[in-house]
Image (cartoon, rainbow, N blue to C red):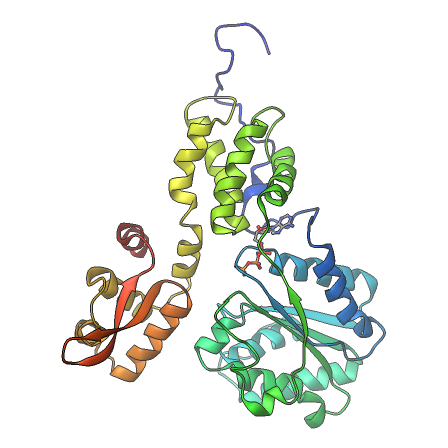
Length: 376
Ligand SMILES: Nc1ncnc2c1ncn2[C@@H]1O[C@H](COP(=O)(O)OP(=O)(O)OP(=O)(O)O)[C@@H](O)[C@H]1O
């Protein structure tokens, strides 16, 4: 750097970023620190598949942003590099929340094209996938990522039952299942039908939240790849880690770094300072809120908006307004209330109401304006 008058100031063609892409949501990190034990357990469960046998089923649990999806992606990449005799398919259940839609994804992963849009029966869809497996003598490993969404739609038992009993209907079909859940309130196994429970005895792999020193360690790697040298001080990075640890979701930290970098550029500064981080946090702290909202249907969004406008009201009163807006009945209403509650968007608490016995009151789990802004 020179001692000229512009020292410390960015010009138009300069950037604090060496590679902004490392802060994007779909970026798969080169290194995956502090998950050695979990990676070992997953590898152990999948090892039989590489030898041509049915792998162990696995249940992966842990709060949001603790590396579950990344671990599976890395594992599948590794299996793919070892052998072509194993087909690995990850299904995002936030998007594919019914048995039919999960199997459509499996069809696509098997044949490299989508099932006919005119629609075929579930039995046919399943039959074609299984027959292809047997014909190719391949093992299929299915990861049901964010499986909690299958539970919200009451589709989990049927989906798992079909996958786990496939070899009975299609002899020779070898399928292993990894279910991934980020809902701490969901006791995955207990909530499955007993017919599924009797065949599903998965290995347990738990992903705890990262502690602050671990977060510093992981984010430091991104900083090195993403920012030019000297852009962010250790002290500022530690503040980022401290804010990230408040939610436990590593996505907050990654988003914080990116936004703080953009804020620094906005000030035409070559360095990211505390003020850039604090300002960025006002947005980054809502990243999990934005993520949950982006997957809601129109009626679910409508209900959330009604709750936002009647924060703390009784479920019965909220229903009336919801019904007026959507014309939907009480059963559907209750299902959506439960889903929003399980997603941590609202809290549905029982309370005594004068003279009316016990009733649920619905309140928002986030700041009202933050929710309404993001629903627009
Ligand atoms: N150990 C790690 N090293 C580097 N990056 C990581 C690590 N763990 C998580 N990440 C990053 O954090 C983000 C969230 O991770 P990931 O999607 O794997 O979490 P998750 O547990 O599957 O979350 P959710 O339950 O919400 O789906 C991703 O951008 C991922 O790259």
